[in-house]
Image (tube, rainbow, N blue to C red; front, side):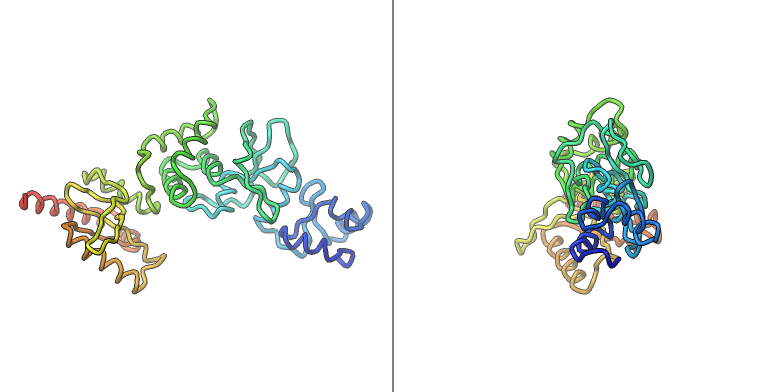
Length: 313
């Protein structure tokens, strides 16, 4: 690698060890030198005209850079894009999933090719490392073909919470509504089940809890129902039954849950009681240990709360 200039070394470092033939030639190498470097194991051919330095690890990001370097129109999408965006509720593929036009075959191996006739400029984001990745809304849409309804619903809530809005997702869905498009039916099913005004559930576990409670006859529950406490602070419990003035919170002690979080939550619960609300909490650890029994406990607490409200009335 003594033949590499500092400039080319910087390019390789910024692109996960991936360089192109054009970059090698521009750096002063000849076609014969490139062939010799491949033969000597100094660089590894990934795609036609695309190489990875032998000293660079074969990472998922490097594979994505190589795919995008092989063709300027390639866009990493679906579960592969979800991995790059660090989406939750999606499996993590090792092989890049890429979108290409129907008339193109730029890559023959090492990727999963999906063809499309709809890829607007707003659907792709170019990263500093050379990866062209589907935007969060487009990645979300393309994940629908690979997930079941329950997991896609959790993903939808997470994307709404972290990356997008309902109007944006509906606009994309409308634009992509071509008969026979993989995943479109699942997108419509999941999107049609939630109201546009409904705030996103903060986690997949939270969504499971609210759905389980509603199936058991609690509610209907309102997500993120605003409660103004006596000190003026407005809180938004995960789920609430306004008629019973009852709310449920799912605490993620595996994410946070330190002393200060606990103190804050207890203070908010006292404030809720002062305005006539009962807030019951359950943790992710409790649910992981025995989901069904803790749901039954919450159902019983809600039933008792409803009885108290009736007596008070």
